[in-house]
Length: 302
Image (cartoon, rainbow, N blue to C red; front, top):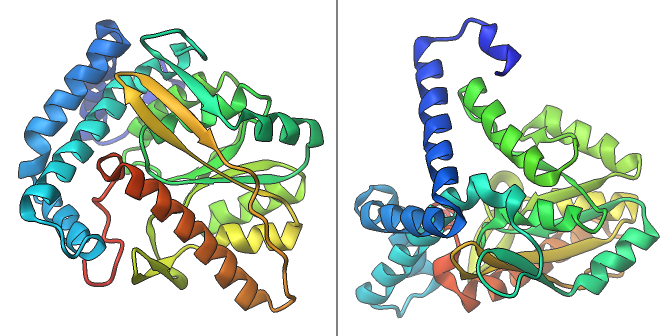
């Protein structure tokens, strides 16, 4: 029992907490494959009819202007299925094992990059996007001795927020700081990197106070924090994403650190490095568009 439950909160907070806790326990009892399949079926059945799917359709029209409605609907259904699978797999992340011959588990492509970074040590920034089951990235990288802190959007309900964090930390099998999005979290992340810490960032969401870069051939406000911090501290930027192979079966694809030579023009360097990240994300998304989260208003026209 969490000690913070003794604190007085609105009754609906407790109701939301217990509802989510029971749902996660239900999916846990199903086992990883059934949980993934059930979650995928449920979200695929309901998601396309939610108003959020209109945002996804608008985004797809922008990203794939010659696409047919049927093609967009297929991608949207696949997106909801992947999201549902992620939800069903969430309570199982701590139990998934590496390089299992079949069934639930995960593997890594490009693990030499992680091995070399672990030997080297020091500050590093891992960058990715909401692709496949992105929740598997932190525990997989931690397996190589590179547990990293990350930014997260805190749930409005503090009880729910702590419950979600407890599952994430259980999967990591270690205790590390997690930074809530916002000015305070950004300052803590800077100090963390300055001390030689490791940081992970999902770079594919709109950031109104970011910089304008191109994404799928359209201008998109993009967070430049990763580029700014990498340039400031001279630390490597290591890209990677999660490829879905099947129910609770995942592949972590790790790329070599981004190669970039600063020119000394800081704003221009930040822009070029941020654009490089956007270009890489786009390549990954185009490989399996149904596995990306199309629900954010990524472009001004969405």
